[in-house]
Amino acid sequence: MTYHPEPAFQTLGDGFADPVQAADFPKTILRYRNDRAAKTVGLDHLSDDDWVKHFGRFEPLADNLPEPLAQRYHGHQFQVYNPDIGDGRGFLFAQMRDDADRLMDFGTKGSGTTPYSRSGDGRLTLKGGVREIMASEMLEALGAYTSKTFSIIETGESLMRGDEPSPTRSAVMVRLTHGNIRIGTFQRHAYFTDTEKLEKLVDYCLKYYFDTEMKGSAADRALKFLGLVMERVAVQAADLMAAGFVHGVLNTDNINITGEIFDFGPWRFLPRMDLQFTAAYFDETGLYAFGRQPDALHWNIYQLGGALADICEEQALKDTLAPFPSIYLAALREKLLARLGIKPKGDKVDDALLTLINNFMLKEQFPYERFFFDWFGGGASESRAMASPEAERYKGFGELCDALKGYDPARPDALKHPYFEGDAPCTMLIDEVEDIWSHIADRDDWAPLNQKIDAIRAMGEALNPR
Image (cartoon, rainbow, N blue to C red; front, side, top):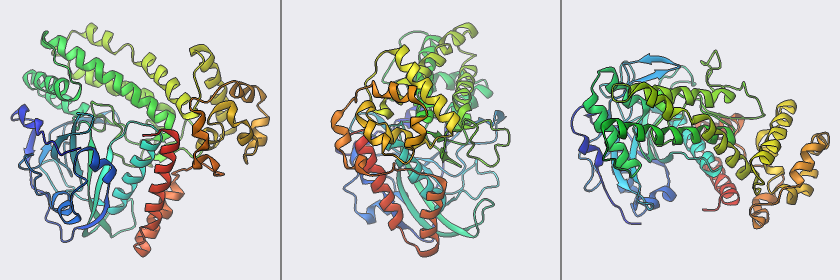
């Protein structure tokens, strides 16, 4: 793949972002470069020095955006509308095509203050960057549609944070996403009743992120756009649930229009099946608990519909959004069967199996990853499951075991992968996260993180061959 710049955001004109400058950091120490992702956009050839120049000092990439742009948006934060936000510690740095001919965006986190920083320092802790690597790598390996952590550069500042032992180390991160436009971007222009900008934004997204250009009315185009985003966000809900991932802050400013999981904060992977499990200590009501994530995303997509209410008729908006539950359930069925590595038998039969699994895992509060590891391939893994440390618990649910034994593997060769010769699944639980970070914080030892990334990618090759 060769580098193919395309700074399309400039075509929107004024009123969507503000030119900003990156912070002048005292140090730029390269800690992580994602060459696998870089290869997809033709930048894997960069030397470490050039990498730091572009992703630590933010010298413009060739023929790309001449200066960073802090995007303007609003958002519902825990379902309370906030008009005082925007890119407060990040910006859009560059855009280019990837090896699938998709327009990709480089967005930053921790790159300095902007007009939307409010009282914040515009910085990112190194721990926050490391956590984002772990979350995005694990989600990608599990087959979820996620942004990629592209670069982490330590910046040599000491930060004070209330949720980390402080002072703590600082970093600047670059993420690679297929679209950095958020639901909250539309909400901002709706807030100011600026239908001209809303229509421009709809057309921009249709053209550059959905490869669709509508020749109908503004309402037709907006409804087409809303339907496409609704489908992506419904699938995102299924991704979260199938991966056993709790995002933590599913606010409308954290949901992009392409349906990628991104902007990770206090995330967690489920240790055990628990619909009430929350990731954020400040989520006191459990609004974004594991089992409530589909409802949260359904609510969010209705806010996008509301932002288009000055362009489209109310009933047309409601009709466009109505399929969300059925799309979500179909996607969840598909993704759970993929996680089990089994061939579908038919919707009713498959739903009966998934109901048995759900009931078993809830009753037993079963280790989430363990189940999918033990039974990957269905009947072909019966002996593996019966040799698991959890075998006795399986034996107590004969109906479930019989149902699983009736399924054939989707890829019989997958079970020959070395991953399945191990005695435990690859996980990313909070104790592991903290242990990996402690090696970095206490001894500047990055080996455990690199080893974990290798293990995650090996799992990904077993589950979802590239």
